Length: 302
Ligand SMILES: Nc1nc2c(ncn2[C@@H]2O[C@H](COP(=O)(O)OP(=O)(O)OP(=O)(O)O)[C@@H](O)[C@H]2O)c(=O)[nH]1
Ligand SMILES: [Mg+2]
Image 1 (cartoon, rainbow, N blue to C red):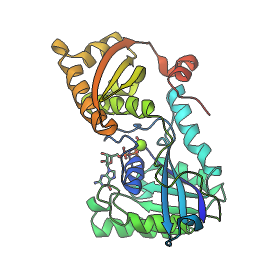
Image 2 (image 1 turned 90 degrees about the vertical axis):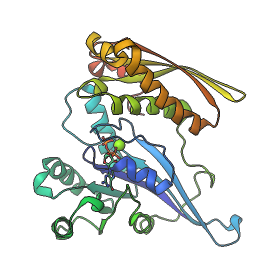
Image 3 (image 1 turned 90 degrees about the horizontal axis):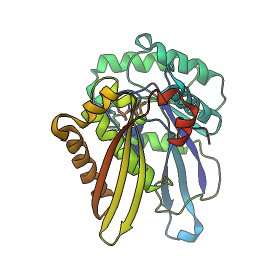
């Protein structure tokens, strides 16, 4: 059996989490149109068994690690995110470097490229969002990266539509060493359901809120009680300013109601039970620069 770890890295918003979900065929990472959505490394387990004899354990198991977008940090949270992403470079057997535009337009890509050149790990360059590129633009990006002697393979995919994702999985598998089966065949993630629940709520806040507000939000699950056919969840939504609290709650509580409603629908689908979701909004000023708060919210190095 072949098995190993694959890092998915790149600038914010290039589609790393969308790609992880597409590879797994299941949503375990939240995705939005706003940069800096992902804040932790998120591991998804891909297993494909081959042959008729399951005890022979022929096949491949890859643990894909979705990472926060690498950017120039403006606070301690940003530093944590960027360090978490760069830290995976040396922990994996292959790296997928995602881009969605030509190099010249992305100083961020250039910075990541320089970091990638320093590690020996095999690298695959993945041009994502080909569904919205004209062929000329795609060719330009393709040649730009193909000419560098940094990447084993250059591939174009659409994580959103699933185009060429199978080929990408094959390319990653070709770099996996012989190894054990780390996880049971049907396991897709190790992340606790509490964490996924907090992420789903944060995703809805990112989708419903504009500008700086959602970036200063952290979600903490205070209660997660599973009863027969019902899950009771209480969540505290922390924001950085009093004015943000008012905006999240909205006129007559309408905004928060909308966020809660859409989070609840997704949580019910995930858990397969009814969900009773309570949310509170609290202010914790400048928590993104507080080591204690970051640690409390789960943003710390493992
Ligand atoms: N058209 C198109 N849009 C895509 C594709 N993949 C991702 N997107 C969109 O790009 C946006 C960002 O996707 P994410 O998966 O959240 O990006 P990310 O790289 O994980 O972003 P961060 O977590 O912020 O670093 C979302 O609006 C996605 O729907 C694609 O193949 N085609
Ligand atoms: Mg992401």
